[in-house]
Length: 445
Ligand code: GBH
Image 1 (cartoon, protein in one colour):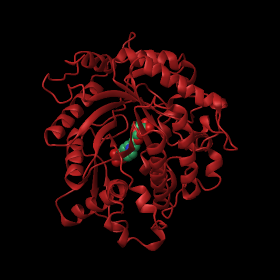
Image 2 (cartoon, helix red, strand yellow; image 1 turned 90 degrees about the vertical axis):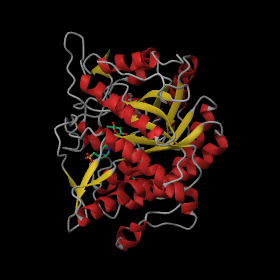
Image 3 (cartoon, protein in one colour; image 1 turned 60 degrees about the vertical axis):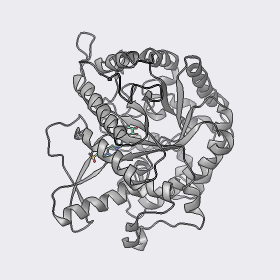
Image 4 (cartoon, helix red, strand yellow; image 1 turned 120 degrees about the vertical axis):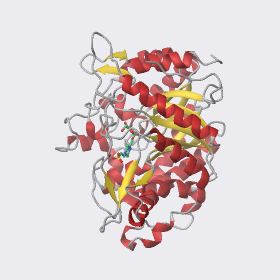
């Protein structure tokens, strides 16, 4: 029923940050006060979003933000992670949208007043559509446009930001957006994925240089998603398949950031699938970062297949979330300790972790015990990883509240707070109360 932190837990220390996370397109609404984004456009496409919805209104956070921030404060979290909508702070002609910028400045001021650290993500998938029309992340220029936007924002925010993340999950932007077409802009071309990824990583590196200049005192880094890859069997072929998938999906992003090169598998790829890399790019990509944000939801199991070399296997267990993702906290431990073994890691922050569940409002209550269990077991995995020497400094629950779950629309609920989209009423689920009580109970609080 509750979330417990032992008094001697490394998570029960003032050095460990607890927070909640959201992203702009998923919660803001306020479609008329910003540029069109690739998600607005993608949502118009027949069959792209399972319930036919979009982010025009979402949680109406753009109007209800003051109430939302009060709610965040009442949860007793140390930090709030949110993203800035590029198309809300920049106009089509490259000039600044003062009104949009002021929205985020007001939000930052309020957080500061309430003593909540601001973790600002600069890109959580909502690329302005006019940039997509010039090629989006397939166009190298987009990386430079991003650095320019980051320059504007980081100057305007001054010292109000505790931590910046350049990008959220570039794998999703590149692979789901340009290779499988499950996400905006919905392109489906095997030649596009790695090129988009390269430009995203380049954008990150350029933005890191800007942040180093404009915001040297904040903790600056990037957020990656990881699915630790397991082999379907102990056969040599399946083990090889899992390793291959890991190089493509996980190492492809972290290795260039920390070591300035792509994994060896790049040498085995047909030229046509390889990204075009200009000289100097890898050096820009591997700027020093203050931390790496890790988003963890589940593991992935692979078996060998002829065509691609690996094939995803459906989860073999009964404990699945409403997304159909296996609940597997041991995967988080394996991921963190593996990364720590393979790389010289900076500080690690778990920037997202959480689960969609079939939440039902019954007599004013949402009893989401399964979500409480999910959080509890994943916190335990983090504790174990810290005990094994991984420098984990924070944990953010995804998400503060139910919101627009991309291709799944509003049908999947990840919030610890329930949102009634008819009335925009927010109701704390039992998990939010458990999180709040756990945070209040910390020895330094
Ligand atoms: C995050 O993406 C996003 O940052 C956030 O906006 C979103 O709302 C949240 O997660 C919930 O989806 O088929 O079992 O291998 C997470 C994206 C989810 C991509 C897991 C890879 C693999 C699942 N990742 N997914 S599986």
